[in-house]
Length: 110
Image (cartoon, rainbow, N blue to C red; front, side, top):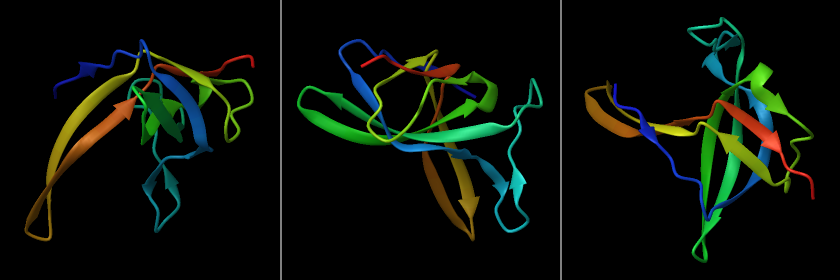
């Protein structure tokens, strides 16, 4: 699978929705685990602001790699952010998108 590094220079990133467990199976309440460490994965909705435009992106990160008080509006640093394109078939229809994964999400001092 392709992994594309994301250049965060010139981008302000802030928490839009605090971290929540990433679910592997919502119906049965199974939390997704990191394939390498076995630790729990979390998602953080992050507002990216650059060049007068804002985009909301969901970023996956290992729970152990979250630091600081990550509440709505907190400016954050996203270390090792990468994008991964994906494509699957659901009910006979092809779907595609991009997922984002960070090595760490850290609250910045205001």
